Amino acid sequence: MVKRIVGWFVLVPLCVVLIIFALANRHSVAVNFNPFAIEQEAPGQAFGVPMFLVIFIMLLIGVVLGGVATWFAQSPRRRDERHFKRETERLHRELDAARRAPANQALLDVDDLANQ
Figure: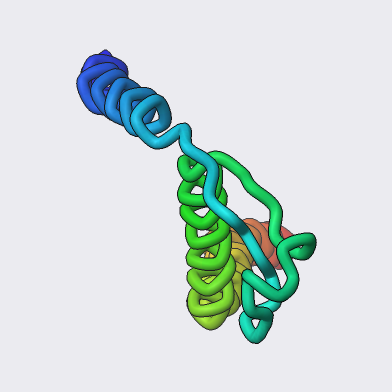
């Protein structure tokens, strides 16, 4: 419940700020993917898009690239976690077998005493 309330207090103002930013930056800017082209010589290569779209797309690309970089940076930790999880499961199986072994051994000892 607290996470939901905090989420509303963070997300609603953030969305309002982003909407205000988009409305304030509606003018078109020339986007050209050739950094060596001179705009006056080749005006057909550039195209106009609203400025807020350029900024939002760059922000989205940055978030995706940051997520990918974090994923690759954490791969050794995930590998270690899988290793330790397998090791823990193996040790639990050994412990369960060791707990059952004395009980089985005690039953065998009682049977040996009864047969003598």
